[in-house]
Amino acid sequence: MANINAAAAHQAKPSPYDSFLARFNVAADIINLDQRFRDILSSPERVMIVNLPVKLDDGTTRVFEGYRVVHSTVMGPSKGGIRYASFVDLDEVKALAGWMTFKCALVGLPYGGAKGGITLNPKIRSTDELERITRAYTRALKDVFGEDSDIPAPDMGTGGREMAWIFHEYSRTYGYTPGVVTGKPLHLGGSKGRIPATGWGVMLTSLLAVEKLGKKVEECTCAVQGFGNVGSWAAKLLSDEGMKIVAISDHTGGYYNHDGIDVRDAVKHLKAHGTLESYHGATPFSNEELLAMDVDVLVPAAIENVITKDNANDIKARLIVEGANGPVSSDADAILDEKGMLIVPDILANSGGVTVSYFEWVQNRRGHYYSEEEIRDKTAPILSEAFEKVYNTHKEYNCSMRIAAYIVAIERLATGIDLEGNY
Ligand code: NAD
Image (cartoon, rainbow, N blue to C red; front, side):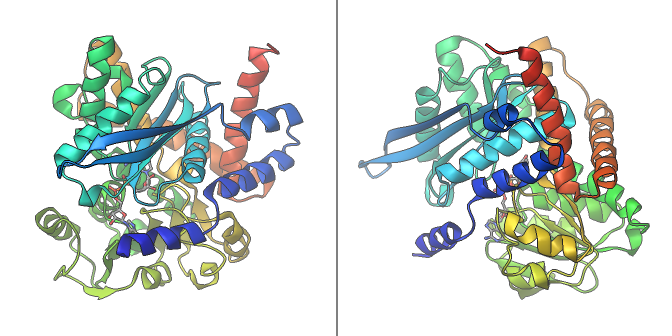
């Protein structure tokens, strides 16, 4: 019942793809983008729906619906994660695929954008069931995936384990191909630094934004929504930098401590119990209260559409750094802009993950592996340069950082489309 309600609540929120298009159109208007580029970039190249009959542990068969959307291959093979959640639908996957195109173009990676998903609640499926579902999904899309065509990665509800199954299932048909998927376990060709990469990028871009606001990191308080891969690493790394993390949350609710949360202790609790529920180091409160907290920095790192026109007026943070994809719906943009908030948009703030994924792919293809320090040294300038470019564009056009990020990405994509010619 809880899952059905969660899915219904998710459906009632604004369409993520509409949010993607709304921002795209604002940026396109500012730079007077030619209609040809508008048409190409506002429609995904390929949309695939696969129905996967899978035998469950109780002997019955259930058909799971899966998606893969390739938004663009203009800048290179399409790249994007696979999401397992009960609320996954085609609209969401299309938006996530579009954001991947813009993210990769923004940070200058030789990739286009894609995304995949299966509508299922991974928490109620056994490991064996998840393996069968993941292998069925891989078989259904084996002619789409490829190290030079479409390269999946983890997203919400998936991780190294699922990527290892995809790598193995794909290699059964095409031979050893580690570069077909990123986010693999280290043991199977994964990259050092991939697990914390997205949270690490959130930390880095938060520090750059705090500096632009003329603040010192040790003076800042922060609330982080979502305590999975992105949120927990962002919280830990920001706390290591001296920021006071006063609130964290997951799907069980929010947890607040005025004196600062001991993030390592919270991670230990999560590892032991699987959720933050009954975490003793903080007082429980709601996710809505977390979003409305009077903190310097708010990091939404869970799901889409948590800030909409309905609660945008309640937001008090001076800086929002979007760890999640699409946490702010487009109908909230004007309200937040009016309040003078600085927002580091998702396609910039969480681009550390795909950047290290790119280095994983490079390492797989060369058969030569880097240390974690080398990975950080290669990733940091890419993110810092993208941040500066977006910040300067935001000043140049007097627009939000989000629209500036879209402008930078659109200009690169339009140049690529133009150079390809009319075929
Ligand atoms: P995850 O599954 O590891 O963690 C998700 C977290 O959000 C969990 O703590 C979960 O309990 C919490 N959550 C779920 N529903 C919630 C709700 N309604 N309210 C509050 N918390 C809720 O996922 P992740 O990989 O950390 O991804 C989080 C977000 O970051 C997603 O939007 C994803 O697309 C984006 N992202 C992830 C990566 C990556 O490398 N993992 C890269 C780029 C962007």
